[in-house]
Length: 124
Image (cartoon, rainbow, N blue to C red):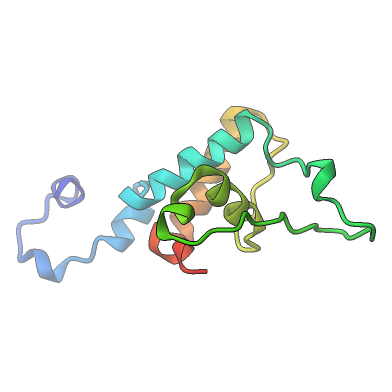
């Protein structure tokens, strides 16, 4: 509703798609706010660095983080599972070594232009 108010749109709301408006005003969707906050948590606590117990004997360029064993949907909602799942994704290309303000801008830009949503990350 707010996006339609910004556009001063008076017609039928079914005829105005909001996807281009999210891109135009650089706004995150409701489910993307979770990943924006999650990426900030990873950046703030420096969780993007690979722990030494996760390293293998072989030298690989992009090590995959070990996923915790889960049995239920509740396990998929836990923070350590979501952090590892997010860091293992190849389509999230954010430089975690930036300063906080530029990191936030890069995260917002990446999330707005991509189709990353909470439902797309839950499915294993």
